[in-house]
Image 1 (cartoon, rainbow, N blue to C red):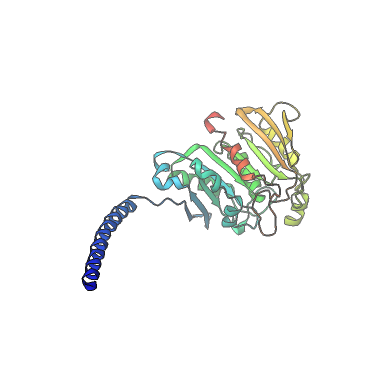
Image 2: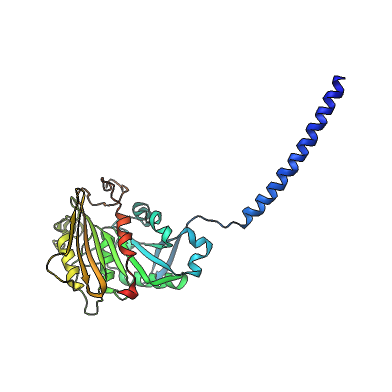
Length: 318
């Protein structure tokens, strides 16, 4: 009797298991079919190179998540070129500025160009390379291979990369839409064919390397001269003059406990010139730390501030 009950129960369990297995197999088939149809959704980062002036010149390119769905094939996407500082690698710059965290939602293609010996040639620093020529060729290459909106080509960078960004604004003003960069100045002459470009410079008030008042300490350390005599305020007026901004002083000024803003508006070609001062930041104004250079301690997101400035400008409106 007990054996018959056991066998009956065992038989029912086998039948139930088979039924459930069939359901599971059916569901798995459906799930499997669904997974096959779903494309990879992660952002794509690639290292690419070409020959320029008999040297291999390379860069890191970041495609936003939406690009994996073909968005940047069917729609033109903005280009953000993020230029590293002296001695900083492209990977370090990408991690430091962390722009993709902010710009992926705006379908931005990010390029991190690599300087020879991790440096850039502008004015009194830091190499003898034709870096303007390299960056122009790189922009052309990305435009050719990706669906770039040529009215939205933006530059940013840190320190030596900020200098280089402003050099590009000066010498390639017909191409560059706007610049917003960190901890770098320029007093290089503006060429006669310059067309005004919106400029924002973000600087730490207690920067010990590129002093807020003068970058001469940096030029002494790097090239052994006092050529770097420009400062944050002088840099702002340099660009205000270049962009034919009206007035002798900024027409917009605001201050908070941890930052201040000086801004020239209504400049030629609908441009602006902005100095954003972080009162407690040193040479590194980003949120992230880098190799002993602590980020801004008050939590202001310099990358977000820069992108919010840049994306407001379209070349056809300038």
